[in-house]
Amino acid sequence: MKDGYSDMGLKSSELDGQFVLTKKESLFPAEWPVRESRGWLLASHPSLHVVTIETADGQELGWLIGHAIDLHASLLSGRRCSC
Image (cartoon, rainbow, N blue to C red; front, top):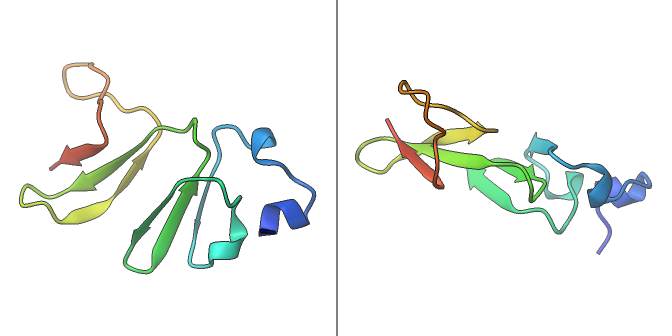
């Protein structure tokens, strides 16, 4: 299946650490993991660390892209972060 990036001659391997925030499914490499919230799609290179941010009662607020540290200078780990 063709996607916007392969149409431009780009390969997913050339996009290490990159992400795309879009409302169109065709604008990122087909093999990238995709997260969806409120009509937005976040597609990211598999090597990019992404954490879902949610409220204490489990409602999704958005995503934290990259590596984050907490108030104790510890690396935030896992796939979800509660606020």
